[in-house]
Image (cartoon, rainbow, N blue to C red; front, side, top):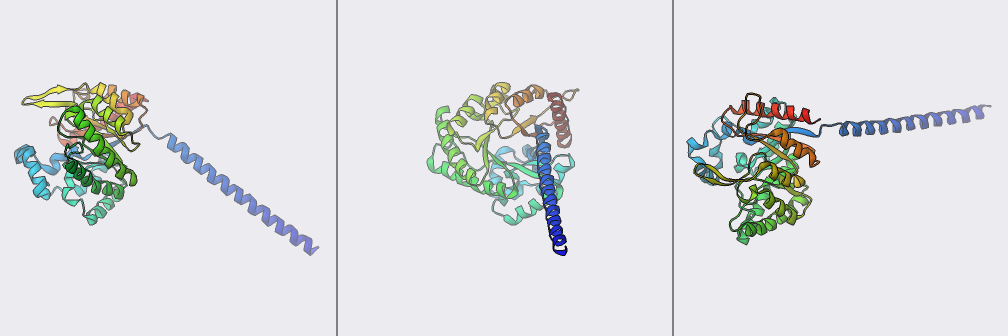
Length: 340
C-alpha cells in the first residue's frame, strides 16, 4: 500500500510539473504574441529630431562669424572652435527628450574633432541612456566627395566615413547620411558616386549600418538622377534620405535658379528611403509650412509603404530654434493624425 501511495505521489508530482511547465510555456507564448501585437500596433511614423535644427545654438550666427568659407576653414584647422562657449552638444540627448522626442539625428560637424575619441562617445552614450533617447542616424559632411573624379581622393573620402560608421554602430544607430557630390557632368558624377557609395556600402554592411544619400544640392537634388544612382548601386543597405525642401539644383546670387519639383522628387526617392527629413522654414497662421505641403508629402511617403522616423529639421529664422522645432513637431503630429 505504501509503495502504491508512493507511486501515486510521484505521478501526481510529475503531473503537476507537466501542468506548470505547459502553463509557463503557454504564458511565454502569450507574452510573445502580445509583444508582437503591440509591435504591430506601433504607429507607422515616429518623430525624430535632427540636430541641425539647433545649429545656431551650437555654432552661433555663422554669417556673423565669417560665413561658410570661415566655417570650412575652421572645421579643418580647429573644429572645437566652432562650438560656442557654454553650448556643449553633449546636452543634445536631454534637450531632445524635453521636446518629447526619443530618437535623435546627430550632425558629425558638431563633433568633428571627436571622431576617434572613444571616451567622449562613451560619455555621450550614457547621456542618451539617461535621457531615454536613442541615436537613429548621423549626418556626415566635410569628409570628402564620394563622387570625386580622382580615384585616390574618392577612396580617401570612403575611408574618412569609416570612423562615423563605427561611431554609429557603437551608439546603436542604424544609418549614416552622406553626400553624393563630385565634379563633372551628371553622368560622370553619377558613375563616380556609384563607385564611392558601393565601396562605403560594403563597409557599412559589414557593420550593420545603412548608408543613405540626401537630396543635398547639385545633382543630388535631381530626384531622377539620385534614384538612378540608387538603382545602379543596388545594395540593400544603401538608400536615400528624402528631404522635404532640399531640391535646389543650382543657386544664384539671389537664391535658387534651378529648383526640382519637390513632390516629384520625393516620389522618386521614396522607394529607396531609410528615413525622411521634414525640412521647415516658415509657417502660416494655421501652422502650415509655407514652402512644403506636409500633408501632400506624407501621403506620398505613406503610399510608398515607408514606416519609421520622420526627422524634424527646422532651418528658418522666422521663429527661434525652440519655437521652430515645436511648430514642426505640432504640424507633423497633425498630419500623422489625418493620415490614420
